[in-house]
Length: 520
Image 1: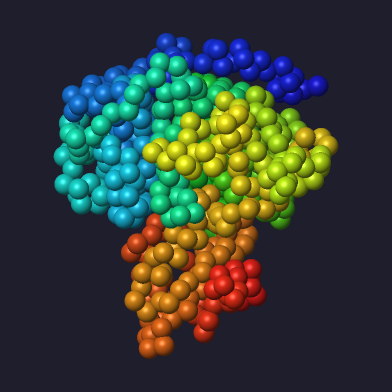
Image 2: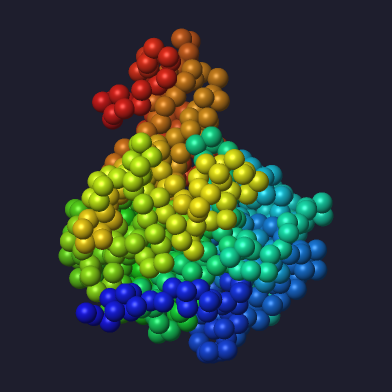
């Protein structure tokens, strides 16, 4: 048995949980004690050692505290991957406030809906590394924060003095560390409450299974505003003492240069990132060069066999795969370092996590049969913020999270996701619920009704919209795409709008989305 398999099989989960720090904000302090001069964070403009990161967290926490942030308050961080973003999220949780990590590339309407629901005391906009964050800051007339030592980059803030704090819990499995917003099937934002233990458990287990070590340089381009980039890439890497090379957004040439010349050893991305990197290299005739790369991972959306084979032939390494969701912090399964798979399985269930496969009748499916995947373990969320009804619908009284995904498990333990029971579209690793896009289209005066589905493309999915227009309509598909562009984040916008005389419907009026596949 190889070392990693042995480590996995003997991983003592109760001991691991007992050894976790009380708070995620302890990670920088522990790293600084181990290796103060070791580089923790690198971005284009600057780099911080472990000691400097701890200093920056302390100074930022003092600044937040001076603006009235207390335990149980929410601190909203509107950013793209950056040093200031990480300093702010650790600073917020140092004060026992909840960090709301929000993607600056969301539209004004989307961010404002999250802000209205979460009611943060402070909203921080990391303006230096994100033009979009700067636009949101200007819209809210945010105040520029003073420069601290060490310099973490420019950010601005607003304060809501009327914000109410939530109770503070001492135990790390009860205190909320982060609110990560996902949009539910109703179109309303849902704040997933993740505890310190949720996030620390995933950080510890995922880094252990990847054998992350201090000499690793991890290319961090997956958004830290999303749970995969936050828990596994950011917290997992820093927990293991590695260096994070931060990139605010994916650019194939920047990735190519980093892999070739910046000692990057770990690259985690969604399938579309790997596909675009290969296309860039081949289009420009670049030779593949990644002399330090040892671990490559795909997650966030389904991986197809052709892309996996192409990636592996060029990279010269196995492409590992995994599965998770925001509500499970996120990791549920992943392929093992010493046991890469030839198929597109999402790997084995991680240690410490239990699964069930539940049939339509509510009974457990037979082994190897398809059922809805239910999950229980230290990774399952505290619940949805200010939404006990949806929490009860998602998590049973005895702690089982209903994922809404259909799955089966091979005799060797490999998990396969075979479909989604919801209409979720996964675009470049981001969740898109059709109802969000439909609401925007239906708000147009010349649209009678709309229906949105996903269309598979290599390593990704596209958003395709079908509309039924009023009799006197003059609006064009291009104009409807532009209408959506003003109201939705880029990854939610339709790649194509198709006009139909009438959308296929049952006698009840319900749109039959499966019929729309005939028009794709």
